[in-house]
Each structure stands twice: as structure tokens, then as C-alpha cells.
Length: 179
Ligand code: NI
Image 1: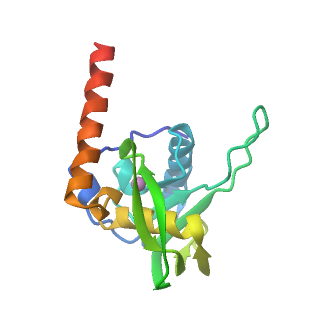
Image 2: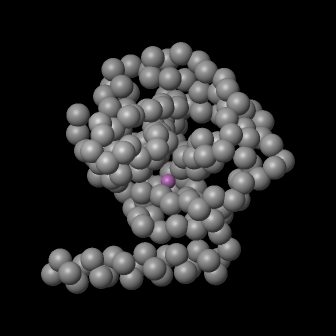
Image 3: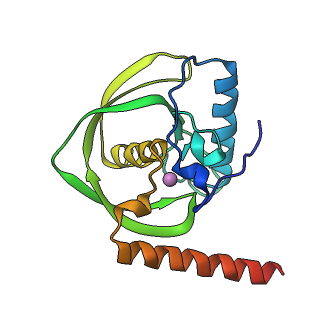
């Protein structure tokens, strides 16, 4: 397994539309393993393949609560290949979102709080389920990546400019510390 480099905005690859995966084979399973290792290392709760420079319709997620201090981490890895949203609720949920491609920046985004989705798993088996709460929000956030959309695109221009300004400032501070 390998830790992959996570692309950050404004990398143009993040704006590409990801292509469907035709066959769930060993090369895809290797990519999945590397994506989990990269996501846990970051750490983050979700990662789309395009964020590591592979514009294919593949997401990994793990929403497990942080384990108790000193305890062995309990992992709940989830894989979504070629995911589709079939229906979504009218009710919406406001959630403070972040993204490994917009590091350390957070902003509230409103999304449907229940969805019905279908996808393939890492063995190529089909699943269809009703999802709600954080799982529904996170899947929608990750699926946006497949369309080249970032959570900051859901914000007003004013709010988005504020987030990008804070990101630029944080990068500049990191750079000057390293120099
Ligand atoms: Ni993201």
C-alpha cells in the first residue's frame, strides 16, 4: 500500500468529470487500499479518487467515531464505485463541511438529509440503500467531486472568497515557517 498525494484547490484535475469504472479488478482494489491508507493518514472521513489524481467514479469513506484514547482504532471502511443518487428528501441538513482538497477550512453547506443511492462495492456487487444524516451528507460531498465540484462551490461568492483567503493565508504561514 502507499500514501498518495492529495491534490488541493485550485488544481485543475479536481475540476475534471470522473469516468465510470467498467470493471472492478485488482488494479481498482489496489487503488482502493491506497486511498484508504491516504485517507486515514490525512486524516479524513472521505476521499474521491480524483483527489489523488485518478478521475474515476470511486469513493472511500469511514465515518467511525474517534476511538477512545489508547484503544485500537475501530474502522468502518465503505467503498462506493459508480455511485448514483436515485431520490432525495425535501428536508435539508446544515452541516459544517471540510475537505482534504481545501485543507483546514470549514463552512456550513445545506444538502438533502436523506437519499436513496446505489453503487458497486470493491467486489463489483451492487447495493441500493436509504442513507441519512452524516452518511448522506458525506456521500453527496464525495459525489460532487466526481462532477468536479467542491463544497466551497455551494457557498455564496462572499463566503467562498473568505474561505479561499483564509486558505491562502494558512499556506503562506506554513511556507514562511518552513523557510
Ligand atoms: Ni472533499
